[in-house]
Image (spheres, rainbow, N blue to C red):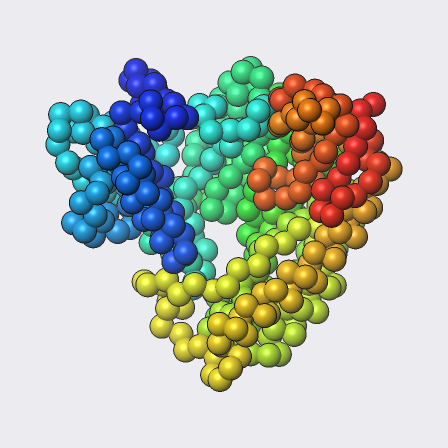
Length: 416
């Protein structure tokens, strides 16, 4: 969107107004692939006269197949070189159906504020991943780690701050590994640099691989420090045997010790994680170990996902567990059991915020109910709960509130 806007194209949120619809696809797991294709076909059905360009991860990995088999799309463009979208759109404007699947371009593409919540922006600091977890297709789609130059990142954040952005969400496939490929400044150095001009900014870190967690960043984290005390750490499992099969080095005890270090250093720390259910070879004792880990870890937030076999990954050749334990019904039951366990833990963790004073970033208002909806430091965009504020404040405002009660996984607050 930034590249096209710089060339004079105008974005619109209404497909009826558009000449071109770009579908940004996901190719990470099978359900996401299916959703990407179904959404593309739905756009074609609803808007038969529009040009449709298929972009993103699915386009990068399966571009040739999509271009051959999906006559409904007018073009396919991968995501390893975003500048290729300009060529694709120019082709479409000349009536040429084209495919562009780049190897690598620059990771320094200029970003803008598009597709962000009010006063909140995402800043990608790296592409690709060197961890090569056996279940993960990201290296097949995005390749190995390629970090952005830290000067480029710092400049982008400065510009976003000048535009009124109050929250910066640093993202990558693994931000903990930032800089390792460059042999230069790492995440701690980058955050230290940002801290010099970050007054008034929330800096949120999203996706820190637990085996690479940089403990040196902890002194920078806190409600009154440059980096929010919010840690997104995808543990994926706790069984040493399963984690080893996943290509990970950790285990439950190691991860519990990491959580202790984080919480001892940053008492107000909030931790989110994700877990895979039904990885090939998972047995009852592995599931019980994970269940015990969830209870001991007392995470604030967690997501649970059933393993998806992805072609080309090492795990796609692994044998699954035998018998009923690997059935769909068993997987769904284990998923629901863990979700239920975690919901109770999350509710208890949220209960601990009642009576506290927090800054809340307002994202939406409901004038009829005289309410505002926002987030505190403990809630990342879209994935966690919300803070319901009694009173109206404009979207993008950051206001001081007192939490008065918990409402399921959300919090209710009054303005101070």
